[in-house]
Length: 241
Image (cartoon, rainbow, N blue to C red):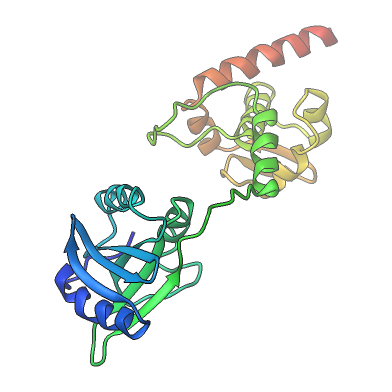
């Protein structure tokens, strides 16, 4: 979200008016609840001025689309692009709503930058991200997360797999990756043990691992998973007797 600024909405008007006039537009302020209206022949532009980006600004701008397709929002600058920019989240939202973005940087002289014009939005789904979501859903064994909750770490497919390994180590003591895979922990067992992302595992000998005290403690935060993998392990062990 754009940072708070001391610029008033009215401070943006004069630089914006001068910029539009130089482009051949006739400009007027405060017309039928529109902050700025600019006209050139049959081209009608409406611009909403705001000190900062907000939901209220979006509501007003979308309402102005009932008047014309050429609706912009104007915000104080400076504007910096890039992945770390404070504008990064604003731009795709405005594009999706088919709104244009103008940034007015006050100074001597002031600078007006049309970042992008309002254009018809074409949804472009990122197949890589979609594939990652589908793979994660398929790899999970159940729904162990409450949507919106931040009280505990999210139970990802990776965490499920690590918990399965930890449950086996807690019940049976030291084990090798081969022995763990035989218990059903899957093809990623060696990688999970070696990376030890959660600090749950310790190598006690070449290719032999045990559960750390941290692993013992943190397993208690996932009782549903521990119960599930405990049952699976009991069934697996019973089948080998």
